[in-house]
Length: 121
Image (cartoon, rainbow, N blue to C red; front, side, top):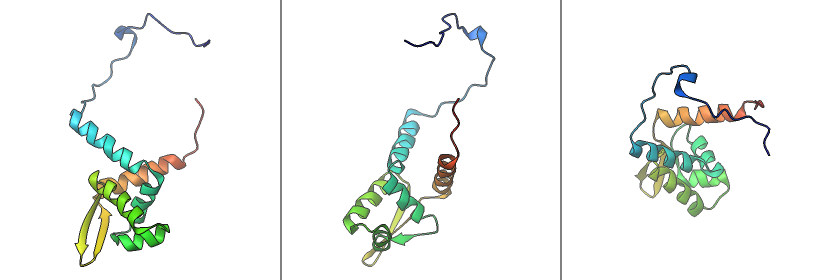
Protein backbone atom coordinates (compact mmCIF):
# COMPACT_ATOMS: atom_id res chain seq x y z
CA UNK A 1 0.00 0.00 0.00
CA UNK A 2 1.42 3.35 -1.00
CA UNK A 3 1.77 6.26 1.41
CA UNK A 4 1.59 8.78 -1.42
CA UNK A 5 -1.50 10.96 -1.22
CA UNK A 6 -3.47 11.34 -4.41
CA UNK A 7 -5.18 14.66 -5.03
CA UNK A 8 -8.46 13.66 -6.64
CA UNK A 9 -9.59 17.28 -6.89
CA UNK A 10 -6.96 18.26 -9.46
CA UNK A 11 -8.39 20.48 -12.17
CA UNK A 12 -7.03 22.58 -15.00
CA UNK A 13 -7.51 25.67 -12.85
CA UNK A 14 -5.05 24.25 -10.29
CA UNK A 15 -2.17 24.30 -12.77
CA UNK A 16 -0.27 27.25 -14.17
CA UNK A 17 -0.85 27.97 -17.82
CA UNK A 18 1.82 26.43 -20.06
CA UNK A 19 2.59 26.90 -23.73
CA UNK A 20 1.12 24.18 -25.91
CA UNK A 21 3.67 21.94 -27.56
CA UNK A 22 2.77 21.07 -31.12
CA UNK A 23 2.73 17.30 -31.50
CA UNK A 24 4.44 15.93 -34.60
CA UNK A 25 2.52 13.74 -37.01
CA UNK A 26 2.03 10.12 -35.95
CA UNK A 27 4.33 8.96 -38.76
CA UNK A 28 7.09 11.26 -37.51
CA UNK A 29 6.74 9.87 -33.97
CA UNK A 30 6.83 6.30 -35.30
CA UNK A 31 9.97 7.05 -37.34
CA UNK A 32 11.66 8.63 -34.32
CA UNK A 33 10.78 5.64 -32.13
CA UNK A 34 12.20 3.26 -34.76
CA UNK A 35 15.44 5.26 -34.82
CA UNK A 36 15.72 5.15 -31.04
CA UNK A 37 15.07 1.40 -31.02
CA UNK A 38 17.77 0.87 -33.66
CA UNK A 39 20.31 2.93 -31.70
CA UNK A 40 19.16 1.41 -28.40
CA UNK A 41 21.30 -1.70 -28.63
CA UNK A 42 24.82 -1.33 -27.15
CA UNK A 43 26.47 -3.14 -30.08
CA UNK A 44 24.73 -0.93 -32.65
CA UNK A 45 25.47 2.17 -30.58
CA UNK A 46 29.15 1.20 -30.60
CA UNK A 47 29.04 0.99 -34.40
CA UNK A 48 27.52 4.47 -34.54
CA UNK A 49 30.32 5.72 -32.30
CA UNK A 50 32.94 4.21 -34.61
CA UNK A 51 31.43 6.27 -37.44
CA UNK A 52 31.66 9.60 -35.61
CA UNK A 53 35.05 10.33 -37.18
CA UNK A 54 33.97 9.39 -40.69
CA UNK A 55 32.97 6.59 -43.03
CA UNK A 56 34.37 3.09 -42.58
CA UNK A 57 34.03 -0.13 -44.52
CA UNK A 58 32.25 -3.12 -43.04
CA UNK A 59 35.47 -5.13 -42.86
CA UNK A 60 37.17 -2.41 -40.83
CA UNK A 61 34.19 -2.20 -38.47
CA UNK A 62 34.05 -5.98 -38.03
CA UNK A 63 37.74 -6.09 -37.18
CA UNK A 64 37.39 -3.22 -34.69
CA UNK A 65 34.43 -4.95 -33.04
CA UNK A 66 36.06 -8.38 -33.04
CA UNK A 67 32.88 -9.70 -34.64
CA UNK A 68 32.00 -11.72 -37.72
CA UNK A 69 31.43 -9.74 -40.90
CA UNK A 70 27.88 -11.09 -41.18
CA UNK A 71 27.02 -9.97 -37.64
CA UNK A 72 28.27 -6.43 -38.20
CA UNK A 73 26.60 -6.28 -41.63
CA UNK A 74 23.26 -7.24 -40.08
CA UNK A 75 23.59 -4.50 -37.45
CA UNK A 76 24.51 -1.94 -40.08
CA UNK A 77 21.59 -3.01 -42.25
CA UNK A 78 19.23 -2.28 -39.36
CA UNK A 79 20.87 1.11 -38.72
CA UNK A 80 20.56 1.90 -42.43
CA UNK A 81 16.89 0.91 -42.49
CA UNK A 82 16.32 3.31 -39.58
CA UNK A 83 18.09 6.08 -41.57
CA UNK A 84 20.85 6.47 -38.99
CA UNK A 85 23.63 5.62 -41.44
CA UNK A 86 24.25 5.90 -45.16
CA UNK A 87 26.12 3.41 -47.27
CA UNK A 88 28.04 3.45 -50.51
CA UNK A 89 29.60 0.64 -52.45
CA UNK A 90 33.15 0.91 -53.72
CA UNK A 91 34.12 -2.21 -55.68
CA UNK A 92 33.82 -5.08 -53.17
CA UNK A 93 33.68 -2.81 -50.14
CA UNK A 94 30.63 -1.20 -48.56
CA UNK A 95 31.33 1.97 -46.59
CA UNK A 96 28.99 3.28 -43.90
CA UNK A 97 28.78 6.78 -42.44
CA UNK A 98 26.49 8.61 -40.04
CA UNK A 99 23.47 9.89 -41.93
CA UNK A 100 23.96 13.52 -40.90
CA UNK A 101 24.84 15.95 -38.12
CA UNK A 102 21.56 15.19 -36.31
CA UNK A 103 22.75 11.67 -35.63
CA UNK A 104 26.12 12.90 -34.41
CA UNK A 105 24.42 15.32 -31.98
CA UNK A 106 21.98 12.62 -30.85
CA UNK A 107 24.82 10.21 -30.04
CA UNK A 108 26.89 12.82 -28.22
CA UNK A 109 23.93 14.16 -26.25
CA UNK A 110 22.63 10.77 -25.14
CA UNK A 111 26.08 9.57 -24.07
CA UNK A 112 26.74 12.81 -22.20
CA UNK A 113 23.39 12.49 -20.46
CA UNK A 114 24.00 8.80 -19.66
CA UNK A 115 27.37 9.67 -18.10
CA UNK A 116 25.85 12.24 -15.74
CA UNK A 117 25.41 11.21 -12.15
CA UNK A 118 21.86 10.27 -11.39
CA UNK A 119 20.17 12.02 -8.52
CA UNK A 120 17.29 10.59 -6.55
CA UNK A 121 14.23 12.79 -6.50
